[in-house]
Image (tube, rainbow, N blue to C red; front, side):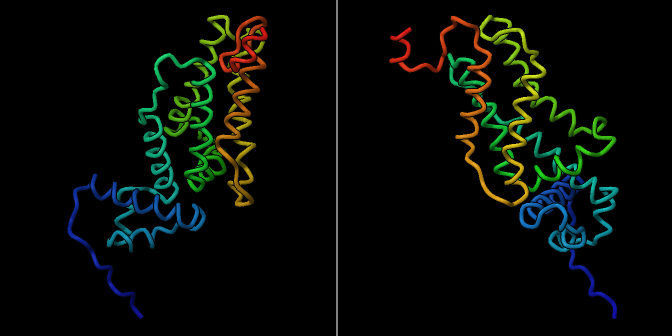
Length: 218
């Protein structure tokens, strides 16, 4: 028995159609996880034939990768400047909090990037890799500033500190990404920030986060 014809909607310009396909795919990712996204359902929700999707994307994987890239571009484009006069501790916590909240808000996309794209041998040639580097560079730049100004010790490399931060973020969120529990973004951000900041603070330098009582004791 022949399949019923797809009810097509009004024609859209190519870039509008691409945006619609990606928006629907992102919604399905959120609902079902990347393993269960099928292009036939994307097409049905868009009111187009499945072949139309492959007119713009070579494969489902490419479509999902483009959705992930758009997500990273949103993250990088978000205007979240720290308050005027914010110190290194406050700015570090904001960036760590951002890294944790990204995963908390978009677990399906996070799983796809961490479990599928990052293990791809061609990952370093992908646009998503460059976008991720731009995000992680924000923490690297802040850590370098702290070392250069004498706030942090210089006996641990900035690269290693950055890797420690993101390794901790990933380890803290793995159970959540596997659907085995939840986590507190605020609690994790405080803990990671405190370990890095206090562990790297130069001896004799005032802790920016010290309470008025502890400042009096010094």
